[in-house]
Amino acid sequence: MAKILAFSGSLRAASVNRKLLKLAASELREAGAEVTIIDLNDYELPFYNQELQDGGFPEASDKLRELVEAHDAVLIVTPEYNFSFPAVVKNVLDWLSRYRPQPFGGKHGLLMSASPGFVGGNRGLWALRVPLECMGVHVHPNMFSLAQANKAFADDGTLAEDALSARLKSLAGDFVSRVDKANA
Image (tube, rainbow, N blue to C red):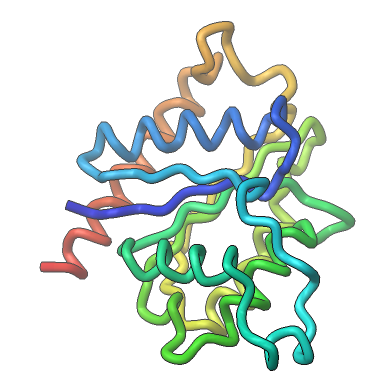
C-alpha cells in the first residue's frame, strides 16, 4: 500500500488549496493509498541559513525529515505566488535538501494547485518540479491545476464539474498505481 505524505503550500485555513488537498487525499485513499496530511503551520522553520544548520537542524526540520522518510510519496498542493511557489515550501525544501542521505531521494511526487485565476496555479507547479527533481523525486508527469477554484467546489467539498472530478480521480488512481508498482 502506497504511503503518501500530503501538505498544502498555503498557510491560510480557508485556502482553496487546502480544499483541494483534502479532496485529493480522499481520492488517493479511495485508490488504495494511506495518506497522512500535515499542516506546515505546525512545523515552523527559520529561513534556511548555513550558520543555523552548523548549530544543528531545527526540531521541526528533523520531524519533517522523519515524515518524508516514512512515506513512499509526497502530494504537494500549492498556490502560485508570482509565477512560482510559496516561500514556505521553498524553505522546507531548502532545509530538507541538507540532510544526508537525501530524504526525498527516490520518492514519488504528485503536484496540484488551485487558484481563482484562469491558469490554476500551473506556472508555480512547473517551478516546483525543478527543485524536487534535483532532490531525486520522481515527479508524476501529470499535474492537476484547478482554475477558477473559488467557483469550482460544490457545497460538500467535491468538485462541481463532473469532468474535473473524473480527471482528479483518474490521476489519483494512476499515481497510486505507479507508487505501488515501484514498491513491488
